Image (cartoon, rainbow, N blue to C red; front, side):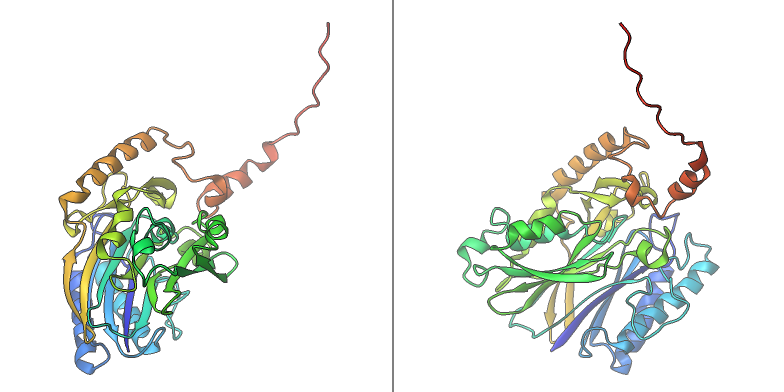
Length: 371
C-alpha cells in the first residue's frame, strides 16, 4: 500500500498575494529531500499555485500519520521564518495553531490524502487552487463521477457503470454523510449545490470500493473565527481503469465555474485553469486559479509531472473566464459579485452592523390613503 498526501499552506506571498518566492519552494524541497533520505517519504514534489506551497508526498505510513503531518508542519514553520526575513506578505497566515498537536487538521493547512494499492498503471492528477475556498471542487467532482454527459465511461465503461459513493462533509456542523450515484443524485445535489457549507471529501467506486478522489475541506475562517485568507483547496484524483479517464477528469474545467474567493476572499469569480507559468493571480488578486499536475505513480515514486492545463485546448476557457471577470467586476461592492452577508461574517461587516445598530428604527405603520 502507498499513501498519497498533498498538504498545503499559504506561508507568505510575493508580491502581495500573487506568487511564491523561489527560496520558499527550495526550502520545502530541502526539507522533504531530508525526509526521503531518512526513509519517511518514498518520494515528493513541491509546487505552488499563487502564494500557496503544496507538498505532494508519497509514503507507506497511511493517512493522518503524525510523522508525515509533523514534517509538513515543521516545513511550513521554517518557511514562515524565511518569509518573515524576506518580508513576504502574510507570512505564516495559514498556521493558526500555536504548535503542532499530532495532526495537521484544524491547524490551518489543508490536506488531501488517500491510501491506495497501486495498479499496474497508476495515473493521478493533483489539483492545486488559489483564491478560492473548500467546496470549489463540488461541481467538478460531480461532473467527473456522476454526469454521463461529461464522463461517457459511466455509460459504456463497465468498471464505472455501477456508480460512485460521495462522502460529503458539513463543514459548519462537523458532520458527514455518504450518498450514492446515480440513485441518490437528487438528494446529493441538495447539499453539494451549497459549497460554502457542504464539501465533497471523498469519492469511492461502488463496485470495487477503491477511492477515486479526495479533496481538502478545511475552512480557515471557521478554524480561526475571523477572516485570515481563503482555503485554497487541493485535490487528488485517480484516473483510468475503474475511474474516469484523464480526459474525463479534466473535462469539467472547460467551463470557468463561479466560485467564492478572489479579492479578500469576499467575492465570486471564475475558476481559471492555467499552466504553472500563469499560476500567479494578479488582477484584483485573481481571478481564482487552478493548476493540474499529472503523475504516474510507480512503486510509490512520482513520475512527472505533466502540466495538464498548459494546453491550447483550455485557451477558450481562460478567455471566457476573463470575460466573466469583467462582467462581475462591474458590480463592484454589490452582490452577486460580493458574497452575500451571511458569508461575510468574518470580515468587517459585523463590526459595521454593530456600530450602526442603534440607528435603525422600526418602520412606521402604513397610513390609509385619503380620497
